[in-house]
Amino acid sequence: MKKLNLIVLIAVFLAACGSDKNQSVEEVIAGNDLEKIRKKRAEVVSKQLEIDEQLKQLDNKISSLDTVTHIPLITTFTAEKKQFNHYLELQGNVATKNLLILYPEYSGILSKVFVKEGQRVVKGQLLAKIDDGGLAQQKAQLEIQADLAKTTFERQERLWKQNIGSEIQFLQAKSTYEAQSKAINQLNQQLEKTSVRAPFSGTIDDIITEQGSVVGAGQSPLMRIVNLSDMFIETEVPERYLSDVTVNKEVLVELPVIGKTLTSKIRQTADYINPSNRTFKIEIGIPNKDQTVKPNLTAKLKINDYTSKNAFLIPQSIISENANGEQYVYVVQNINSQKEGVAKKLIITTGRTQGDIIEVLTGLENGSEIIQEGARSVKDGQTVKILELNATSKDSI
Image (cartoon, helix red, strand yellow):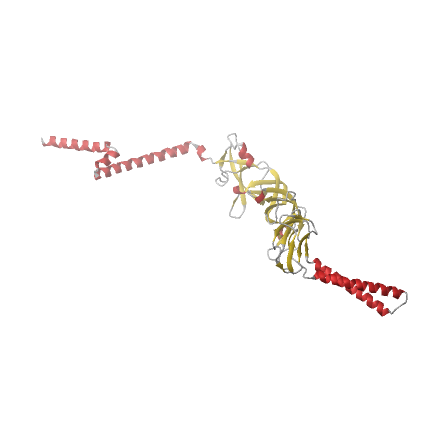
């Protein structure tokens, strides 16, 4: 009887254990039994470790059977000789030699301004008048005295030719007349300074001093006059480009503010090198028929300082460097029908750069398949597979 009871207890215990294992995670959690929850967690962890081990075995088997996964996928482009134009990129400011602020040559009251802002004027046109402070009256008095001196001199001259009178009388009359004439000329020069005239044809850009103001000679700015027909860009060039940046060299000019791009030429290069920054100045003429180019606009300049008609051009991003400082790229050799080949490292020497493009001087051969995408992940002698690029991608290389 005791044995029978023991067997029944064991059967009940095993049934209870089996029912715990069959319970879901949600059911165990709902039971709020800490011991059962811990057992369920241990059971889940055990299953997870078992699954991870199985996945590892499966991955190893796949890796041993599928050799394609070991071949890096790359893209290439064909090395071809092209014309390479290198441009020196600079920034300059638009200027004009016909931009001037006019100052008076005579001190006094600005009695009259004859022009308005925006008005077109011609060279020599009267722009403003300064009160002469009585110079005109002085001139009138001198002219009366000069007329008398002239009459006296002419009479003395006639008498002297007839051998009448003394030589000293003739010379005194002559001296008096010449002195009066020179005094009038001097007053005329002073009176002319009271008139402000246009030094060149152009436009009155700004009236700085208003009519009726007191102005000082060489001190009070009166107005600004500008002519936009002879515009140029002035910039400074590093001295190392002295032999490359010369007169008549073509320049691509961009004026970002007005959205204008044009081609011009260098019209002047300075013979003086600034010792403080080791640069020299150049001038580039700008056609301005539509008058849209204004002084002090910022200009971007591209000057063609180097050209090679047969150059290998590659992106700088695919170039690597070894411990010896040598630059190298990878090419693909022995390409089969499946577009698979062997990567080979080539040591190259490079020249000038333009943006992301660099010139290769030595190391490449015409027709070589150069690795582009994936160039930094392959190794020398490694088998690689070439991916086909679409037409757009090929054209962009």
